[in-house]
Amino acid sequence: MAQNFYCMYCGNKYSSVTSLSSSTCTRHPNGSHKGKHALYEGSEKTKYTCKYCGNQYTSITSLTASNCTRHPNGSHKGRHSPAL
Ligand SMILES: [Zn+2]
Ligand SMILES: [Zn+2]
Image (tube, rainbow, N blue to C red; front, top):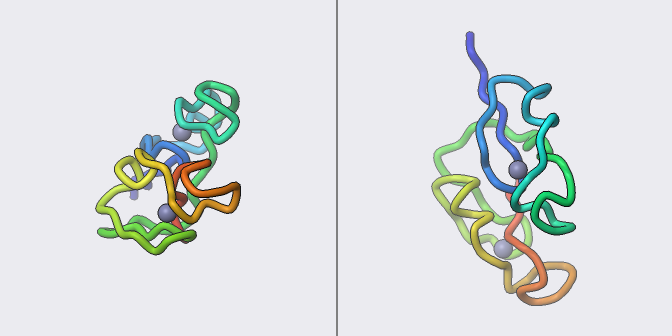
């Protein structure tokens, strides 16, 4: 059965971890293209919850599109991050 793998920073979908980790991420926490995509290790869900603030989104892409008011680096100092 085909399984999808998602980047926890940008929500891009890949068919393998190899392809996911082989390219740089536009939403990497160190800056756009400053690092590789990172595997979201949770299961596929209909709703994703930010682990910092609890806001819910229908996709990782929409979750990580905006900054988090409760980010550990400071309010709006980083993006929402999906809980597992
Ligand atoms: Zn990514
Ligand atoms: Zn958040």
